[in-house]
Image (cartoon, rainbow, N blue to C red; front, top):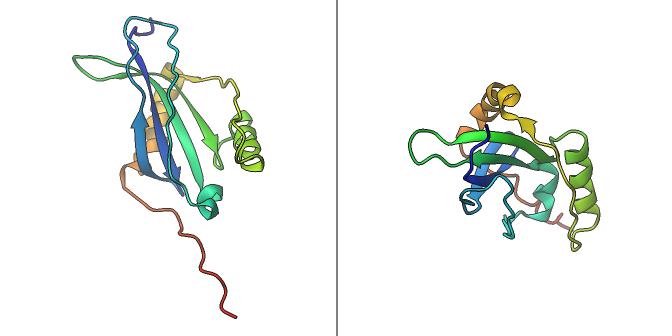
Length: 135
C-alpha cells in the first residue's frame, strides 16, 4: 500500500549530473495530496537545452528510509510526454504550461531509477552562456 505522508522531490539535472534538488512540504495522512507550491530553479537560457527535471513522489517515513511512490522526468532527456511538455514550455517561456504525467511505478522503476540517478551524486555545472562573438 502507498504511504500516507507524500512529498515531491525535484532534481535539476544537467548533462547527467544533479545540480540542485528541492522538495515540497509533506502532506500528512493523505493518499490524494494537493501541492500549491512553486519550485523554482534559476537556469540560464542557453542551458535550457541541456537540463531535465527528475521528479520523485516520495512517502515520508519518520523511521527508516523514505519510499519512492513513483518517478517521472520532464526535459531534454525525457521521452514522450515529458519531452513534449518541455518543448512546449520552451516554445512559450512566459506562459504556464500544465500537463498530467503518469508516474513510473516504484516496484518496476526503483532499481532502474537508482541505476539512472547513481551518476547524479556528483555535482556538476551547466554550460555557461556563450560570450558574444568579438567583432
